[in-house]
Length: 427
Image (cartoon, helix red, strand yellow):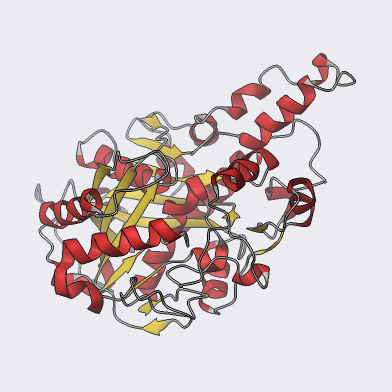
C-alpha cells in the first residue's frame, strides 16, 4: 500500500484513475478480459453472416455476450442501441471498482466525458432499413429512437442513469476518440470544473455499412490463413485490421477527492497532448513529424524524460502505412532510446475497436502497470525490417512499469498521446 499523502494545494488538481470497466471481444468484464488477453490467444473470428453479405471473408472481434453485440439476431427491433448497453455496463463495473457510492455522483462536481466515433450506428442502420421497408409501420418506431443514433447518446445515458449534474461531453475524433475522452475528462478535473469524471468510450460497429466502407478503403485484413491471425501488427505480411466492438470506462478523480474517501488509485494521469496530421484523410505524413512532435511535447509538458518510459502502448492497426508511421514517429521523438523501450499493440488479439480502441487499450495499459507485465503483440512472426522497435512479439514479458505512454490516432489526422504513472510503484 502506498503511504498516505497529506492533501495540499499542490496535490488538489492532480488526476488519478480509481476505477476501470471493460467489455471486449475477450470477455464481458475487466479481469476476465485481462486474463484472456494475457493467455496469448486471439479473440477474433470469422463473421460468417457479414462475410456472406460482403462477398469475402471478414474477421472481427465479437463480444461473447450476444445481447451486447450489434450482430445479435435475438435483439428485438428498435431496442436500445448496443453502444449504449456497452457503455452502461462498463460504467457500472468502473464505479464498483472505484468503490463509489451512487449518491456520491449526484452532485454538481461529478460529470462524464464519453465519446463515440460515429454514434449509434446499429440503430441508424435499423432506421435506414425501416425507411426502405414498406411493411414497417411508422408508429412501430419509438419517436425518440433516433436520438440513440447521435454521438451524444452514450454520455446522455450515463448522465441520466446516475443523476450527474456536472459537465457531460462527447468528443468525436475517429479512432482516437477513447483516449481524447479520457484526456478531456482529466482537464475538467484540473480546471476545477469536476472532482469526479466518468470517462471513456464505446463502439458497436459490426454492421455491413461500416465494414463495407472499410473494405472499399482497402484497410481491412485480407487473405488470412485463419481469423485469429488476420491482423498482424508490425509484421511484414500485414495488410489491414479487423473490426471489434467494446467499451472502456475509467473513473477519474482529483487526488484530493480520492484521498478523502480513502481510495487507492491505479495510476496518476500525468498529462496528455493533441495533434493533427493534415496530410490526407486516410494517410499520414511518411516522415511522421506531427506525431513525433506530439510525443516530445507531451513528455516535456509532463516533465518526463524518454529514459523514464517503461512501456508504450501503441495504436498498431496492422496496416502498412500506419505501423510504419508510428514506428518512425517514435524513432524521431525518442532517438536511440526508441528501440530499447518495450511496446506493444493489442489489436492483433481483439481487433480494432474503433471509437472504443483508445479507452479499452488505456485500461489494459493500467492493468499492465498494476501486474508488472508487458502484454504481447500477437501474430508478429515475420518482423518488418523497417519496423524495428521492441514490440514484445507473441509472448507477454514480466516487467515493472513505472511510467507508460499511450498513443492513439485515427482517420482525418487525429493524434492523441497520454502519460500515466503507476501509483503503487511510485508512492
